[in-house]
Image (cartoon, rainbow, N blue to C red):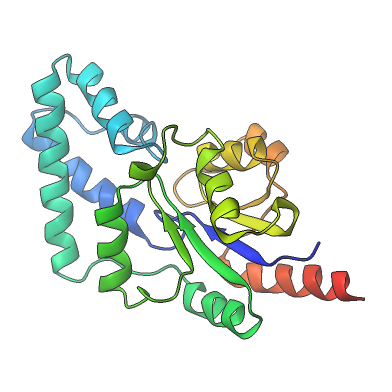
Length: 223
């Protein structure tokens, strides 16, 4: 395997945003008079904003209440961001440096909207570190559909067999598998299911371990 492109998911992979979002989500649920349930929260991880709004419309049984809940959650989350509570995941800076030194291209492919992606990479100081960024706003079909990953390979003109996807969610792993691109799962809030184990190339504990994986893969390919 000779990797020339690494595609990053964002939430829960690059940033500890899922824990921050859960904190905001719990507070919003309480404001809406509902008891927070982790099982409910986990059902919306790795899907687009539109699908999230649809989910909470069904959950509250009312479109306006679903939109109101999403609005409250975003307001609380934005407040936490303004306080500097968004942290990068361990190993992200080191992995970006490694990819730069080895001329491996970097892309972000997130189900989140473009505004949120650019806000997050700007406040954490990595805005200029990526060659290509694609959001849930830019695709017709969100993960687990393969479109988002296929678009990255097409835009950067890099073959799928020379591409590696980094994901923390099952939907992302399913999308990578459907695109026929090797995917590594680095679990965050969601532990790997049997399907995730089957469809991912491997499962690692942190972004630090991706550096070792690339060293072995690319050095082996050059021999």
